[in-house]
Image 1 (spheres, rainbow, N blue to C red):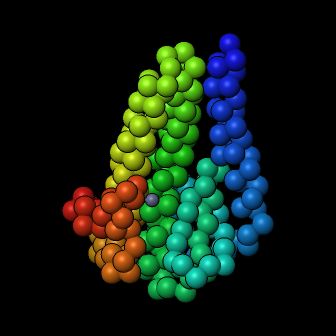
Image 2: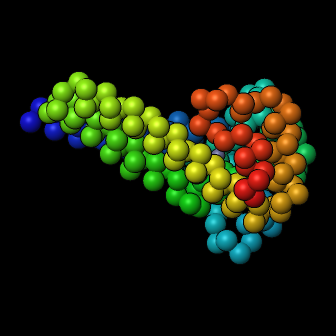
Image 3: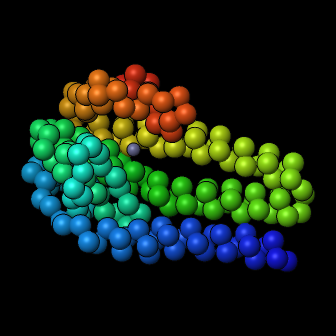
Length: 189
Ligand SMILES: [Zn+2]
């Protein structure tokens, strides 16, 4: 019984983090206007709030509530690049990757806890390893989906320029990275 409570509790904690803590945390950042965003959103019936975080690394994140957080370094790049990066994040929002990620993570964590509690350490360890590999597979799949969504919004040329720049900056090359390599991504769009 304790194990079941513990498993359920872990689900509640992740849900609160996803839908309460993160959206609240992001509220403190300033909302910014991205030139040309309305025109790429035309026909998608989607509205999105863009917030800016001061940071020297070029990056963008989408959050469970549907907000996109961009860094000040990204906003200093060309408009094409900003739109391509935002379009990628819109892909995550549009394909409901946060919700899917939450369901899968929650299921994997609670089943690992149940396995540890009822079947022993070996089964628990096996499930944790399986969870790690499955999360990695899923996250790569989400990246490809967001890439293809972004390509439909900003066009292949603009989007592959962003990916190429990302490659030359030397980021995203780690073997353990949940992100596929830029070459894998370019092939798929
Ligand atoms: Zn992504």
